[in-house]
Length: 207
Image 1 (cartoon, rainbow, N blue to C red):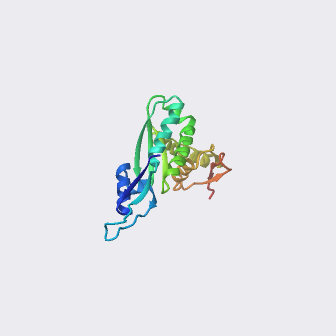
Image 2: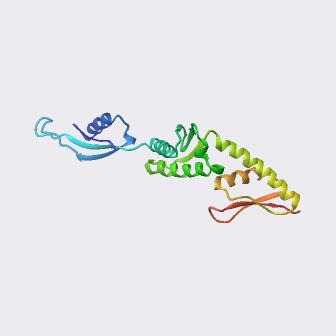
Image 3: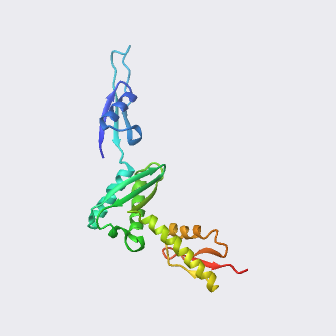
């Protein structure tokens, strides 16, 4: 964490000097006023310059990227992290060799990385960030798989006239299936169980 002390004829001048030394913006720095200074008699005698201490705050996204790179390295994966930011939504796209190790079975490792990256980013961010960690478009492929699964299981529930319980899934995956079946007229979906075993149940609607 970089820190500098700067002086100026006024507090504002001292702050500007400190920001210039840190090569950063006001939003990225924490400013502590050490001495507000004092104007001299007629602006000439007995004056004292203002003194401020400025500390460069870590960038939330940069810290999350470093975390993902460090964890990937410990798992034996050399990874490149591409960042896409849209408002409060940030997506980290991972690519490289052995990327399957970072995805894990049904995306479990990727989900864990996403959860931890979100904790790291929001530790340093002044506003809450929604973090998504993806690896070579796994999320999109997983959504396509879930939509197909929803169609198959809904058809099975209607055909058999019995409830169909799906495997435990994270909340966003349950939401994908729930959304996919919202306009399916012959079934309804509900969540059952407690985390991490919470799952969706597809129930046929009997007329």
